[in-house]
Length: 274
Image 1 (tube, rainbow, N blue to C red):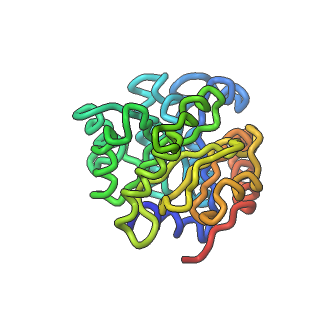
Image 2 (cartoon, rainbow, N blue to C red):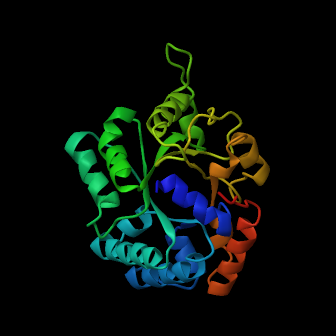
C-alpha cells in the first residue's frame, strides 16, 4: 500500500486530524515539567498515550528534540517507536532539504527501514529544487512511506517567494505541487508524495491533480478553520489532513484531557470509507 492509501484507511476510523507533538520550553513549563530530557520524555509519553489511537497522523516536531542533543534524539526514537508499535502513522517534521548524497543521508535517516529515527513520512523543503529531493522521493516509492513537500506555507515571510511566477505563469508553489502530482500519477489511488499547504492562505495552489495527501498547518490557534480547509482542498477534501497542535496540547497535561481534545478536533474532519 502507498502511504496515501494507509493514511486514508486511518482517517476512515479516526478522522483526518494530524496532531503535533511540540515540546517547546514554554509548553513544558505549562505542563509542570522541567525543560530537560526527563521533561521531554514525560511530555512525549503522555502525547503517545493520548494520540496513538485517536489521531490519524502524529507529527513530532524534530527541532524540539534536537535542541536537547543526542539524548533528545533518543527520546524521539523512543516516541516514534512507541507510536509505530501502537499502529499510529507518524510524520517527522524535520523539513530537511539538500542535494546528492546528503539528501540521500536524510532519506535513510527518516525513511530507511533500519533507521531508529524512521517515521511513516517526513517533511522536506524543495527550495534547492524539487529534483534535488529525488533520493527521499525515490525511497518513499520503494518503501511505501511518505514525503510531505513544502509547497505553500502559511508564514507571511514565504508569500513573495512561493507566489513568484515563472515564465509559464505558474507560481513556484504550483510548480512544486505539479511535480509531486507527476510522481503520484503512477498510482491508481493516492500516492506517497504529499504537500504542505497552509490553511490560512487566501490563495492556494490548485490541488486537484495531486493524487496525494495534503498536510494543512495553521488550523486552530493560528486562525485556520474547517471552512478554510474545505475551501483550499475543494474536490480533494478526503486527502486534506489539518494539523492542530497548540489547541490540542493546550488541553494538557492530563492524558484524558488531551484525548478528549483530539477526539473533539477530529470530529470536525471526518474521513471516508474507501
